[in-house]
Amino acid sequence: MEKITAAITGVQGYLPDYVLTNEELSTIVDTSDEWITSRTGIKERRIMKDGATSDMAARAVEGLLKKKGLDPLDIDLVIVATVTADYPFPSTANLVADKVGMKNAWSFDVNAACSGFIYALATGSQFIQTGKYKKVIVIGADMMSSIIDYQDRTTCVIFGDGAGAVLLEPTTDGTGIQDFLLHSDGSGVKYLVQPAGGAARPASRETVDERLHYVKQEGQQVFKFAVTNMAEVSANIMDRNNLKSEDVDWLVPHQANLRIIDATANRMGLPSEKVMINIQKYGNTTAGTLPLCLWDYESQLKKGDNIILSAFGGGFTWGALYLKWAY
Ligand code: UT7
Image 1 (cartoon, helix red, strand yellow):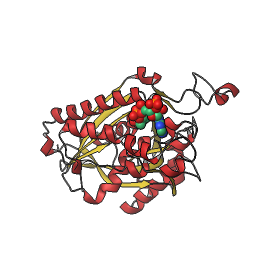
Image 2 (cartoon, rainbow, N blue to C red):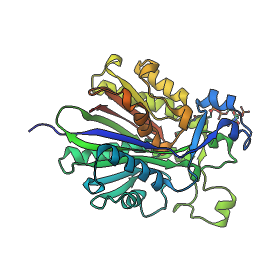
Image 3 (cartoon, rainbow, N blue to C red):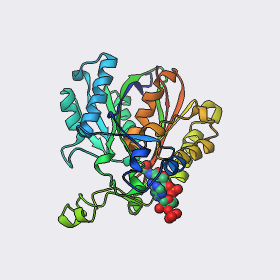
Image 4 (spheres, rainbow, N blue to C red):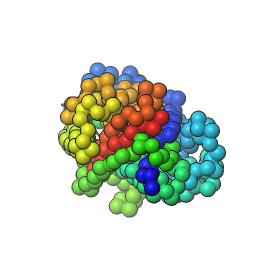
């Protein structure tokens, strides 16, 4: 029997209209366009003013279904990677399926912070590869503005809101997802965490007063782990698949910091023309970065292109996924 692989057969993004520029941020906190641009590469980011994470995700999925000419009832499974769920429960995926009318699908969330999209893609691909399902939608969506402290200049300049969705379908032509390498290390909780609102510290007057419902990050520490691990896992997936630098057509790196992206590309021996970058426009949209890159670069991709997705994020979580573009 021919081997079935899971191929991305469509991608669509959604970005809220409101553009928060470095200039505007410098009127809110003590920062400057020069500092943000030189340390991160970010010029502006989008902010969701009229809805929640599920609304951004639903708009991306509606666009995807329209583009593919599909009925919502055709979809078997919906997976949403997010750390900014609309509610602790029910899952955001449940809400997205309902909003779009994907009534034949079951749905669940994956929480792996900035690596969420790769985790979700790896998970969704298994249901296709086994022959169980024909159409799986994988979404990376985060409304980071809902958990960012706009009094904390070390985090508020970095993050933005956005969502991207891909359709996974079976193929036997050799394209699609070839391999993935995923890791986690929960001891990273001390460096990157939203301290309150969960079972460890339920919401109380004190947690609100102490601003503990916002993202807390030790930037320099996270930076060191991110540079090392994102580069390492990307090099490892190349080795495992006998890929040399010249065999890789595109790197799709998590958009956390231009310096981390450069370090990863250098380790892989890739020139900048092969690296997808849109951090200047959207900042770090957490689980949204990778599908939004694929969406922005979709018109430049060719069938058979060797693409490596790579990410590092809260948890810690990190990983890389190797796929051959299918269209
Ligand atoms: O996606 C999830 C994973 N997250 C990441 O991968 C993020 C990894 N970390 C980073 O990207 C970087 O560490 C940051 C962009 C967060 C910070 O850049 P940095 O070069 O590591 O800066 P720093 O934290 O070492 O701070 C340098 C200086 C400090 O001032 P002093 O102590 O040298 O006087 C900060 O207080 O920059 C100051 N600073 C700022 N200045 C102006 C910190 N944030 C700002 C700001 N504007 N927004």
